[in-house]
Length: 347
Image (cartoon, rainbow, N blue to C red; front, side, top):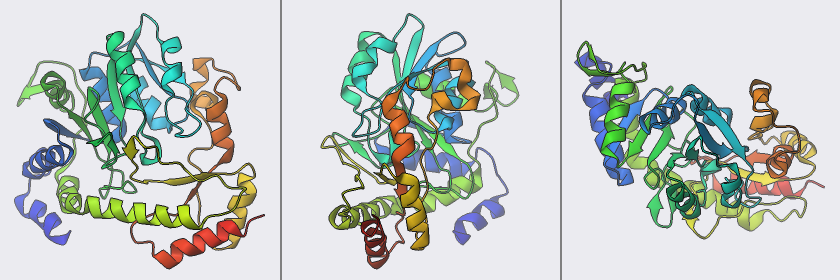
């Protein structure tokens, strides 16, 4: 890390330089994509990917009601209206069976969210999208390195959007993100849009914004990227300990679906007495979090969507029951077993 940072300082070039270009090549190669474009955040990645795919004011974009607000923030930033769909009760991801009913003549894209690091069921989603001539932009903020039918997430739809927020499996030392695509036109548009629409210095072909992955973050991500597969394997080892040792019938463990490989960005259990379980875990000295306590349609900021409580029952049930247990590569086997024992002692 020190060497990478010093390299940037010695060069004295901090925006859109050699580190960013090299990271984009390395990240694209890791994913098996033609293009990777570094941007300022995962939210900007969704925004710019949608705009580059032709989405704009007056359009509609379908996504999951059970997601983090940045997903719909990115959609709103494109000028489009987020249209929510409930989720599958097993994966917590967008339910393909409910997408058709949400499509209107104004629908221009679907944003499936690979929540917690488990792939959404992309084949039926893409089939619906192709039939209606709409785009698929993957929200892969939590899914780096995870797979769907032996392909890494983010390269299966028209574009994939990644976050390098520090707590992600591949995290920078600040904000950062990327748009990944095999579509040359989308790639070129994102390249312009992220830098004020510039085609060459001080010449602007379109209106854009300032959303660039800075050189310091790119250098740090280049150090981390070769370690990502090992870190993801370690997360899966910890998840396997939880799977084998959590035996409390009050707690429902996550299910890894057979169409993909989970990266376990988060390990999320369900419990009808979630708040009591969280207090119990705190009393045992185990930190937990809730991802996420309020579904999108019940957030104050999105009341204009005019969706009332009860509109998305599975998402609402998840918000009342989910609890995230500790999972990160440095967690030891003994610590993971202690977490499991703490869960088992709840009653």
